[in-house]
Amino acid sequence: MSRHVVANVDEIPPGTRKLVTVKGRPIAIFNLAGEFYGLFNKCPHQGGSLCDGVVTGLLQSSQPGSFSYSRQGEIIRCPWHGWEFDIRTGQSYCDPGRIMTKSYNVDVLPGTQVVEGPFVAETVPVRVEDDYVIVDV
Amino acid sequence: MQVPPGAIDCDIHPAVPNLAALLPYLDEHWREIVLLRGMDELNSISYPLTAPTSCRPDWRPASGKPGASLQRLREEALDPFQNSIAICNCLYGVQLLFSEDLAAAFCRAINDWMVAEWLDHEPRLRASIIIPVQNPQMAVDEIERCAKDPRFVQVLMLAGADMPLGKRHYWPIYAAAERHRLPIGIHAGSNYHNPPTAVGWPSTYVEDYVAQSQSFQTQLTSLICEGVFSRHPDLKVVMLESGVAWVPAHMWRLTKYWRGLRMEIPWVDRSPDEILRSNIRFSLQPFDAPPDSAGLNRVFEHMQSDKLVLFSTDYPHWQFAGRDAMPDGLSAELVRRIAIDNPLETYARLGEMVR
Image (tube, each protein chain N blue to C red):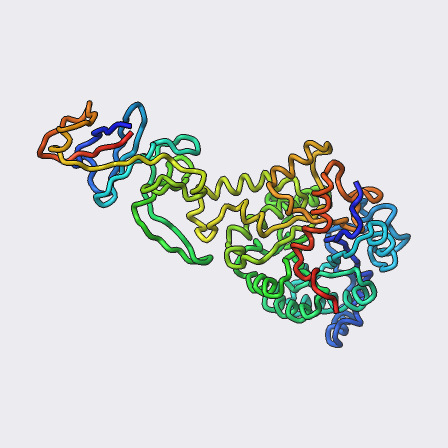
């Protein structure tokens, strides 16, 4: 496993996402209110690009007719068939034990640490005064 | 293949011989109404009297309705199969009536007739409660009245109703059934207030009968999606005379679309095929499946459970010949489950002492 600089923090404001490619793997990077998460960008169902899906919340119900909506912004719905995934874990709603998309560890580090390495940052120019999004792949 | 001794037949059809037979069980007002109106039979287009499927040739009486004689039912449906128990599902057109009061009166009469003319004379018989489904509260009243007798083991509804059976309109019925540990039996048939197919009225009986499985699929989908089993997790629903082989394909479809559309029905918080396996059962006859053993067993593999199918002869309807009520090629273990274990696990009241 190696650590990869994939973006300047300013490129992915809270509530947005960015598709990056690391070691040939498409990875969707999400910023949930300042916390960063990475998901393998192919839906385990048929390979839809999760990064292009609708970001929604967790809809639950205690009984028929009741709708309880929580965790707004933390669920991604695949644009192809609507399967829902927890952005924090990659687990599906429909079958969390068996169906999931791989989740990658994402950190934010200051440029001062990034320039010290060891990081791979072929495409992101690093400056000591900025913060960077780092993915372990 | 024959059934093992001691089997529990979950679907037989004693027949009300004619309307006059119910008169002693109607109270005075309704008896007078029946006579003054000149009411004849409550016939529908279900099970035409002389259709070959309506009665096996060797079970057909010289005159009158098949299934109307207790003695013949003993000799034809109970003794040859060495059944320990058989559940009577009386099909008489009370669901067709538009008057809630008249329907309730007839249901009370049929249930009392069932006790007096069948259950009191034959200890192997149990019965389903016939309800005035036209009015759920009156249906609940009838369930409460009959449930005191432990020989009533189920509540009977028809696959074709005024609206999908998962609708909250019907929920008082399900609450009462769950409270009394009575499964809801949904039998092929209809009140014919709606066409029996989703595309309109067919021309022939064969189309009507084949289309019943459409109704069952829609009712199964409705019951799951509307959240009946989320609200009543202990409720069992038995699909009677529904056919079986369509079940895996339909569940693949329902589960597939639940995965992408479940935000419409968040109370369905388990996969529909999981709900089916915990709450829904199917009677054996008429069994429609591949004729070869390998294909047959593949159907059961696709159902992912050996607990879903309950033995039935569908007496006196013509579904098989001789005593071969069980399809060929099933393992002895599966045959035992279908014949005995599954019915006992489904019908909680069968294990209770009979008064």
